[in-house]
Length: 145
Image 1 (cartoon, one colour):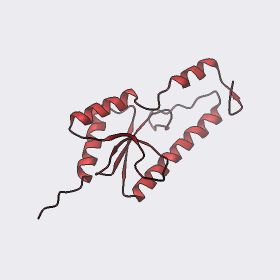
Image 2: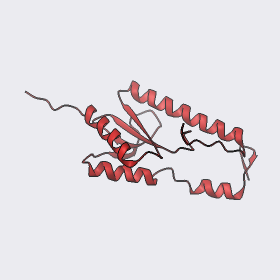
Image 3: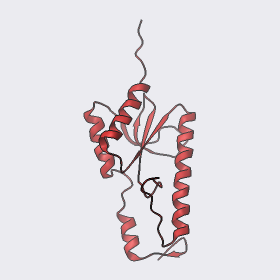
Image 4: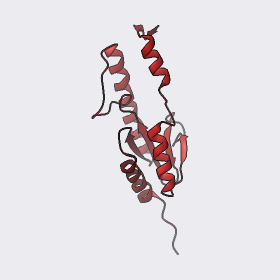
């Protein structure tokens, strides 16, 4: 079988099929920790209409969108690996993912949203603190008379 005209092994195809795109271990741990901290959110939603980009967690009133990024797929500066097989294909794929992430963050910012990016290697505690702080700071203030 070929991916974009390049040969891939059966082992590679099997490994790629097993990759989860949602409800990953880190995402589930983050969701549990945020819920335990009293925060409520929507899961796998598009924060703004007209932009076909789905956030892993959406805090609507605070306008915070959380993305849990995999180190391989999003080119983590600490843990990115560059495959030797089909190297050009994978470098192009990962660079396109990075560009799409930057574009998503810019579009959300333009619409008044904050993107919080969590790397899969981050500890749940550190990620939870970052998200909680962003949500609390951006929550609408109650009207006082």
